[in-house]
View 1 (cartoon, rainbow, N blue to C red):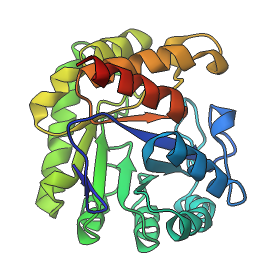
View 2: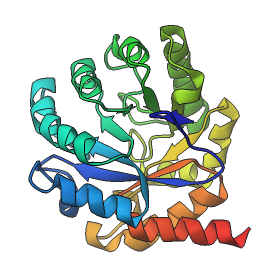
View 3: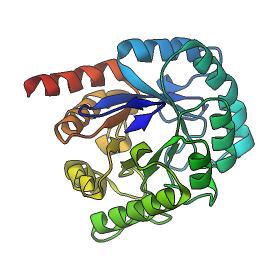
Amino acid sequence: MIIANRKFENYTYVMAIINLTPDSFYAASRNNEYTILKAVEKAQKDGAAVIDIGAQSTRPNYTEVSANEEISRFIKPLELIKCNFDIPVSIDTYFTESAKAALDCGADMINDVWGLTHDNDMARTVAEYRASVCIMHNAQKPLTGEIFPQITSFLQNSVNVALEAGIDKNKICLDGGIGFAKNREQNFELLENYEKLHALGYPLLLGTSRKSMFGGDVAGRLAPTVESTRLAARKKVLFVRVHDVKENAQAIKEVYDEN
């Protein structure tokens, strides 16, 4: 996959989560324009290959904020990152207006938790800026029955939308959407069989970091997150999107060193 003219392949790379929201489910990930540079510096030092900025919480039962509010949260931090670091930056948004503002400011990738289906102009906007995109599976209602046919159908349809809009095939990755429209059992079924998504022909991103599927308090979910990262590395997933860069980067290295 290509992001910001850099080719990512043959490894499992860490995408660092940096939130600019006051209500993200993991408080330690919350930042603002005054802390963003230190957070990115640490993430890069710890082994992050991509920074993913979120200005809208998508935790369970979140309260949606407008595109304008989202932009007001990320625009200054994004400017600071692009002026001070040489690292690809992804913006986690499903609003076309937010995507345009971010891409105008130098963002390299759009991470859309609605897989280009929330706004009709999202795919065209990504294509216009020649940006990269992560297409995630989501659904209006919780999944029932066999989950993989539904997930793969959604992702394939979204890929078709992306390609028809002119997004470069080499700038697309897919996310199965763990924690979105799925119960705990379905989340684990997806995780344990994540390699099935390779059949779609695109690199994969896994996002399990400290999610409720692991049970207990959020502060105690690092160990199972790292184990899921090890699994992702063994399944040749291209990116893991995580809060704890150092621990997950080390786990990936250990898996690849085994081979």
